[in-house]
Image 1 (tube, rainbow, N blue to C red):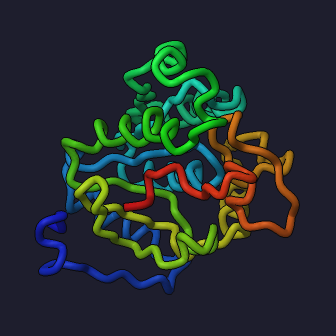
Image 2 (cartoon, rainbow, N blue to C red):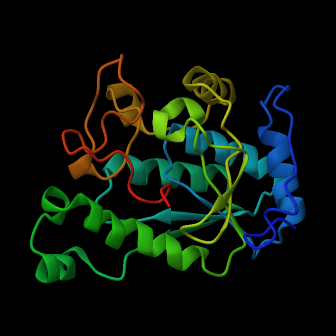
Length: 235
């Protein structure tokens, strides 16, 4: 088993020369290597996420999935979660909330923290809840793609995650945005309706906006702040 501790000794490789560009092989290895209690998929329920869920359920129909419910998501995000739950009833989907409610956060840090200190807001509402979810796990699955942004261009199928001290598995690294949508259309998958309104990447509503067609897929997140990641994928 590949763990945070033995990463240097064991590092399997996977070919991307197949229809799923390596995704199926990576997922089959992941669920063969890690028991149900050792691995979880942290899902945003965006376009990449519904594709990855569809691929995962073919390998592990009752896989564990965690959604970081910040209480600041768009209604359309919650709608697609309901649609996924109906389509794949065996999946174990947990909606994990932060320790602080929005009211408690406002009392401790002031109102609209996301405007003044988006990094701290993400730390409270996303990073810490994911840390709690990952503490008992040896590995987690993420939908990162190399094409998404310059900060993700070096992502590998398997990554040593120093932030959470485990293994981060990224099956879709070689997929393009076109690949993602071809799979959604071919499989008639439910997806977030905001994707049809110029939102390639969808997070919390105060920090997400529509973008033009010529920007990278992360351009609409924290626009004008210089922030590009919520902190889940930075060490």
